Image (cartoon, rainbow, N blue to C red; front, side, top):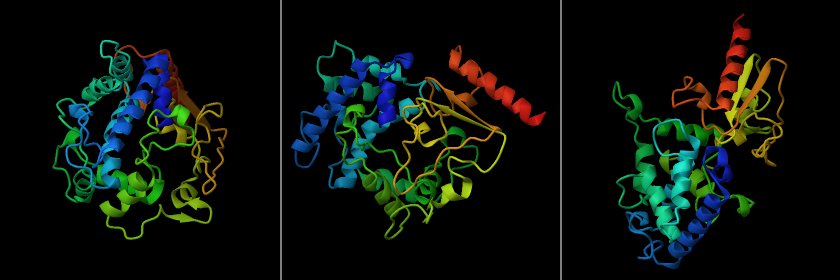
Length: 312
């Protein structure tokens, strides 16, 4: 959530401090109304398309409901300017549009961009999380972009990574979604793993005395290999877990008392840290989404040179 917040402030991609501040105020106002009613979010003060589709019955429903709003922003930031859809600039234009004086209406307008046609927000943990993830059937042949891989991805998160998209942080001043307390590592992580995969007494991914087994096996931030170009975008919410510049604001943010793996770069490894870009932006063809920014051009040149050196 903190990386998402930093993206919403970043002028290079259409963000601004006003956008960030207005969103933070809107989320605070929204959550206050959600908590003031019984069951939660049953108040008529909530704009129509932001109301839950089904009554919120427990903390898991509440977490899933809050995730719809956080996930809308998180998804846009993660894939910003990598498709023809909504961008950070679009969201911030909605949140700073003075023609709508009510911040909740601005929030609703921004969410409508991401979920066009939605008349309410999904709010059933059982129907929206457990049932889809418990479905073991494969997507049909030639499914292309409609292929579903969420069951595999979330299982890998549960079994190996141990990181989930949450809104909790120690610093509320850099996290506009801080009021969404139910989107935490228990409700949005541990309980999802236990319910979706029928794992009794699930606590965390596989670990050993040194930390998470996946990290100790593959080297964590000290990769056991050579000739690697390590690419991240500084607006990608996932970059904070990766091998990045030591001067980056989120360097070492994945370190905890339970899991501490120091970053080390060998002579044959190279970091490419792309300003203003999101998830996997370097993997798209040049100028696919219009003229590439200077950071993208520099990154592509660096990657081409490295690959050429590897195979020469």
